[in-house]
Image 1 (cartoon, rainbow, N blue to C red):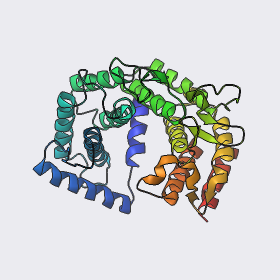
Image 2 (cartoon, rainbow, N blue to C red):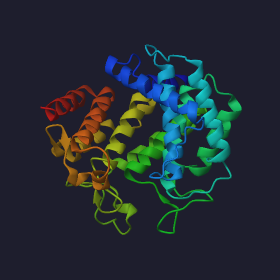
Image 3 (cartoon, rainbow, N blue to C red):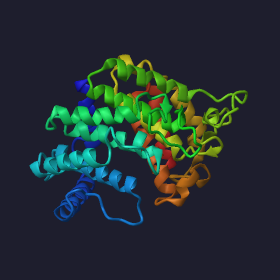
Image 4 (tube, rainbow, N blue to C red):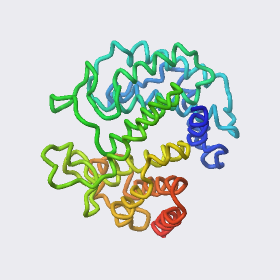
Length: 335
């Protein structure tokens, strides 16, 4: 498990960051340090953003601090103040916002996926410095809200607009929950948890049969015509589809050969060729497969570049024939 944690830190930091990336990272840290002097919670008073989003923003800030803290060529490498701030924010958020007494409100996704994704990486980045008691308490909370990668709404205080919270995790959401469980397993030194998370990946790669679409959740995933659907009927290859693609690529990057054999890398490449490659145009992914993401910051080129990044990462963990083909797609998509 130690090797997985080490590789995760390498993935998050990029080992030795390029100058432009490093400059951006250090500027973000400088901004966070300035904000900390005025507000030690790092939770902004922002009327445009609801509380659950502002709490998540605070986690994102200490994740940034954690990346800088572990980036060797950063001026903030092993800077004690960064750890102190991260520790204070983790403790404050645990005591006031995200704990075993909390009740889901506003948006279920933050509680079951958004916070746990960030907290796993934060714990990994500061693992050597954080006391075991705080680590255990935070993992207990993420496990309370998401005990099993196969289901969402699987906790006593779950909410969902449908009124029926408990439901199967599908598509991009299932890969997010698999990643949460996989990294939780690494933190807990549990091969069993990691293996179970990896085995759940295969479900997302099967072609959806038109005979089994009686419910919205049964419709999420890949189709024979190359479509990728999420939320029952929305073409979502550029966003949820890329969450699925990048999440699988990240896990493949982290696992050893024994666990990698449990992931059908040839099948995920087949899905790339049928469901992603045809959508590229000069580095962009057409907005017709980006769902509600077209209303957010960013554009079709940004989403296209994110998919290309996923292809480059995936290329590290597949056979030589598919590696070459994935790299060719990435190159041609930017011409």
